Amino acid sequence: METVGNIPVHVSIIMDGNGRWAEERGLARTAGHVEGVESVRACTEAAVECGVKYLSLYAFSEENWGRPQAEVDTLMKLMFKSMIAEMPTFAENGIRFIVLGHRQRLSDELNAVIDDCMYRTKDNKNLTLVVFLSYSGRWDILQAAGKLAMELASHPGMAASIEELDTSCFDKYLVTAGIPDPDLIIRTSGEKRLSNYLLWQGAYSELVFSDILWPDFRKEEFREALRTYSKRDRRYGKVK
Ligand code: FPP
View 1 (cartoon, helix red, strand yellow):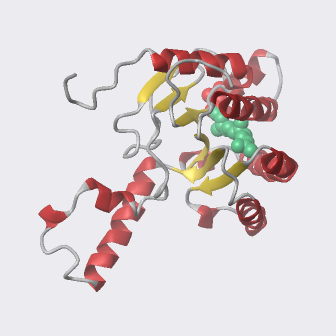
View 2 (tube, helix red, strand yellow; view 1 turned 180 degrees about the vertical axis):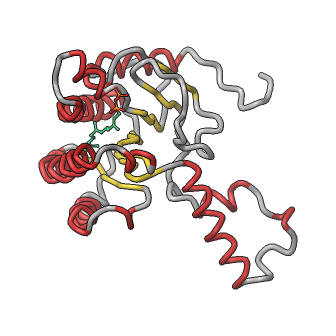
């Protein structure tokens, strides 16, 4: 197993820069997404090798539906093809595969492959690979608040007063229920913002920004981000 210091349990990545990678080469933006899938494979392998237990990827945001239809279609086809192609690799490497997000917006065909892939890999223990599709942090918080409101309305005794609610009460309504909060969020391509990603869950995540465009972000870049993380001093608002 690779040793890169103090290993985060959950690493999350905002994969950015596919379009710029393609444009720099005079290619269509979609060529960057195709190459980006190779980086997904490389980082997944590196995560297993380093002993990371959860790797999550921001693959398609709620806002990404606003891109040109041809790009949206290419991305959805790429997800579909990649899931079918990678299923044997997930089985061989003990990878549990999960998709989280506003799944009602995805096609029936894509949802069927996702369900199949999630079912077939549900008992795998080495790494949980979470792909966020049609996800945004504000949407997640809103849908969780809606579920909590419904629950409180149907069980008025559940919270005698609003003060009894604590953050763990809320966690279980988020789509990430049961998944530990990310210890480390990496964003590639030099952009330094969260772009509506894991707004609740990332409250105490360490942030690492890399100038490398996602299609060039491979195993060594992943390990380098882990090394940077291992030098951080996490205090969660307390003193040591
Ligand atoms: C951001 O780059 C990237 C995306 C919106 C898509 C990322 C998706 C993949 C790499 C496919 C993943 C596949 C699986 C199976 C998880 P951008 O297009 O915003 O780049 P730009 O900022 O340079 O324009």
